[in-house]
Image 1 (cartoon, rainbow, N blue to C red):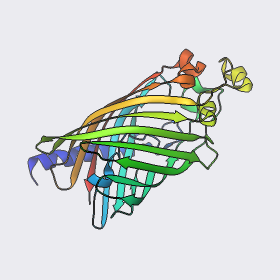
Image 2: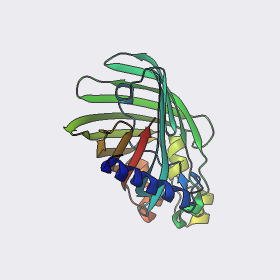
Image 3: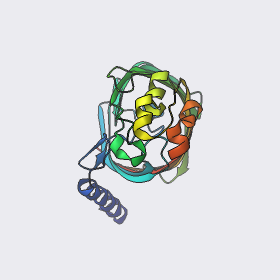
Image 4: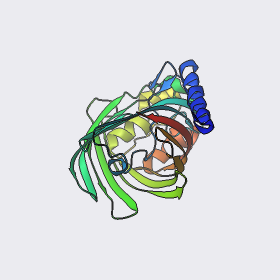
Length: 283
């Protein structure tokens, strides 16, 4: 094995060791130190074209990130998370907590169905949440469409919770691109705007009378609207046959009733930052 590969392997081994020894966090999404709830913004944009396979393609790895303790928090923590993806021809793919089935596709356009598991929020995850109760896990069913007019990829997706977690609807429009830098390096970037229904906003940002008494926050009715706008920029390295490394920074700004919520205004921040680094092995 060459020296660079030894270094890469050592890095993955260190991350795996951290994963197994990390203390279990207090959020619903954490099990044995693994944070399954941390999803990567715009992580699978354009995967239909970039991850083409004649058979099965499987990637497994681990990543770590620095991100807010909950959406709207100004308290940050380090997360360790598993990373995996599975692709079967032009039929279906799984990327962490999202599954897509490709129905109509060609060199420029793809559309299909998707399902996503979204972990909820435990009030014990932060002192700022005490008295607000838990937000349950959700299972969102919906669809997506992506168009590749040239160097960019434009897309939309929609999903409705059918598991009674947030019991709402989310819709997003996004754009992303990848620019080769040479030597196996790629510059990646993208932006996204997300709309949320009243049920989602009320579960995550609303304050009922009972919650107001228990938490000390004023009552607040959260309605539907633009939940956030976000952007990401990063670098990916794929020169080696079986290794895929990526790092990025992302910023999102909570909007409308999400930013006006007393939870965000009085105890958190509408400005959300995240940094992530990950490595995966392609089988």
